[in-house]
Amino acid sequence: MDLRQVLLVEDSKMFGRLAKNRIEKTFDVPVFWTRTLAETENMLGMAKGHFSLALLDFTLPDAPNGEVIDRVVAEGITTFVFTADLNEEVRNLVWSKKVADYILKEDPNSLDYIIAAIRQLGENQDSLVLVVGDSSHYRTLVSELLYVRKFRVLNATDGKSALAILNEYPEMRLVVTDYNMPGMDGCTLCQKIREQFKQDRLAIIGFSSKNEGNIGARFIKSGANDFLIQQSFLVEEFYCRVNHCLETLSLIDKIRDGAIRDFLSGLHNRRYFFDAGSKLLDHARKNAETLACIMLDIDYFKKVNDSYGHDVGDLVIKSIAKMLRDNAGARDIVARIGGEEFCVLAPGYKKYEVVERFEELRWRIETTPVAVLEDKGPLFVTSSIGICAEICDGLEVMLKKADEQLYRAKNSGRNRVLVEGPVK
Image (cartoon, rainbow, N blue to C red):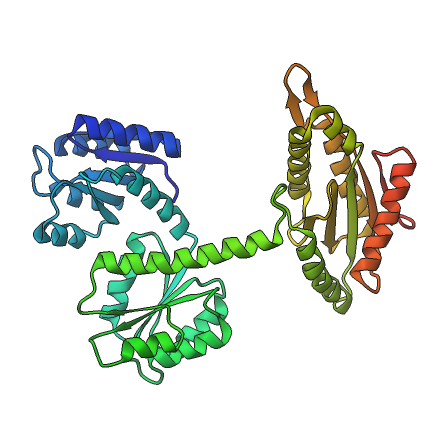
């Protein structure tokens, strides 16, 4: 989430000091600490809507029954509550006030929990959730819980409209669907969704208004990740299941991304370059679009490793990779395909535009320090670049022609850009 200023309301000096220091150090944002409801009222009056997050003690000297929560939530501030006592009455009261979460103060891991929860809110803002059901009460209940946790939420009243929304928003991460709906029940909707979206791309949680036989099992067998009964679920349970579904998707994404990225540079790897590049070439050929293949090699890179060590060589690789990313167009594929060799596929540019882009990149590399060495100052390197700006029969052919121009650039003095044919 967009953390600007954090309000901390806590009458314990020790706990307040620990919480303030930890949050400021972790997120590099100012934390304004008050100890009473009266101080909090004054602070809110001065802040004028600048607080994006609040951490509140349930029991204060002048507000022993959680009165501060209403005052802060009324300002539209995302709120967490600290409490030393969590009996059923306090728990129900806290959740009724639409807070994001509560934290037990006696838990030695309470500060770790709040740090993780704040980070999770930031990630939630990038997650789109679809709530499906013909009952407005059900949609409002679930949507409000999701809004509190900063999710982006869309609603659908039946299965047909849900499928239409999914087609419009393929980036959807989670569907929460009721079972009883006209035309298409929740289990049938799950089956339809799974025809297009597999479990590694989209999570589904099924809901039922009551425990009706084997509906939970039917949901799971139809492709849902989880199931809840509306009458008996706890708010914490709902949030835990939502988080579990999204954390699983996130882990799968990380595994998938790790398989197609170079661990050192963060750029795509050789495997991804050929898989995605072949598709990009086919698209360019079918749509009569230009496509350029660019090979870049760091000049005298072996000498850098031999003279300064592989740690410095790694810094050079990372620096060049960053400059390549900064130079890339929106549709470019940028990859590290060898030790000091990089390759770019750039669709939609005329030949002279490609040459100008990579002349500018060559100059940036030449004039930008790629590392700062102790007692030796900044380290500079140069690069040689070869370009094939003609559509060929295959990606391997384009790569070979770009490599030939790179070889010419190396043999003619390095630190230059060469392209096959006249520039126009």
